[in-house]
Image (tube, rainbow, N blue to C red):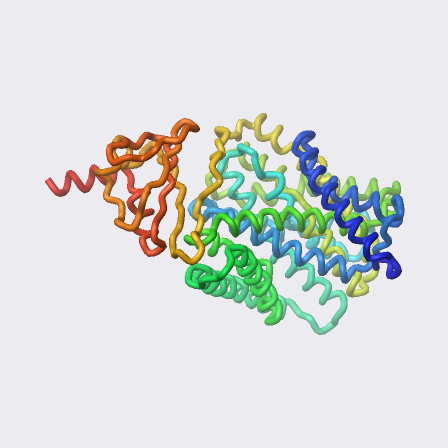
Length: 501
């Protein structure tokens, strides 16, 4: 554990340094193409007892606790920023990869682990289960800001957000098989149905309750709304875990539900979660780096065995799983190659690798060292080459211009009003119309228009152009009506006109 006699001020100074190093490291990772998680873990390994010796840390229980809390926040942030309209188009292949794909990968890795490490079959399958899933934290961080086609990025993000429960279930189940003689396959199948079914139900239920409460409660401070949402994320995981349901699945489903609803203080909630998720990534990967022992991981025996297992994972297990799971879906060969290569491993396998140590499984230290090395090689080799591969396979889309205006939905405290930002698309029915000919609700007032990065003061005869960004102050009760008017397309207006003639 962390050295007990460490001065509290010294510890706080180290925490501040770690966070600053993490932020600077993120900037360097974007510049040089190295995944941030690799650099975070290297910082932890450098600062640990086997590095420069600043911190001694060897508590698997604390590492597991920190890892799970971080995963809750990271998964919740990923779900909040995922658009259901995009995900539903790839739901079938993503869920297939998240279930059948994990089973296939686990089985192939198990055969490799049995051959390379000379351990028994259950231990080999345990290693396969631990590294069988892609990692949401790694995928979300690497895919952020990339211009990879929406279909592929959505598939990878949806898979990584939903396959962690499968990996957790397999890991816990195999540990039970190793530790107990009373566990049988029928109990495990029933447990799987229970965990996934209840996890889905709890996620949807608490997501619905949270979104209703956020929009109807009137808190004194806008800063409390992000805290309220975070509280629901933690509550969702804890309630699910208490009844042996899948907490991670429940968290992702709840976040997906909340993130696709109209929310009061939406902008503040998203920005708060995004910043907190980055902070938790920094803390989690540094802690996992502290927990690792470089002399044990970087010795020749672990290196060559870990490299062989990484090769099996990257070039055999993952491609076979992807090609089989996507055989009946509309993906090109290049799509499948890219999805195979982009199946990054990250924090989840390392956190899961602490489970055998806590359970006292034989060879648990060997498993942790091998898994840590596999994650490092996966993140370093695959993560740093994703953009290059996407360009070579011609899978990049147009660079999405991010709006320079930060306001989306900003609630005006107790005034029961919202300021809405709306960007006019090329097929919007209000293009070419003066403001006095647009049937906005009486409670809505256009305050400003941004056109070609310049402010336009709105008047009754101001004509709307494609690409304009409108800032509209509206009563919360009129928000739904306003958005339905703003999102109406030209085709719909022409259809209504034709049918009324």
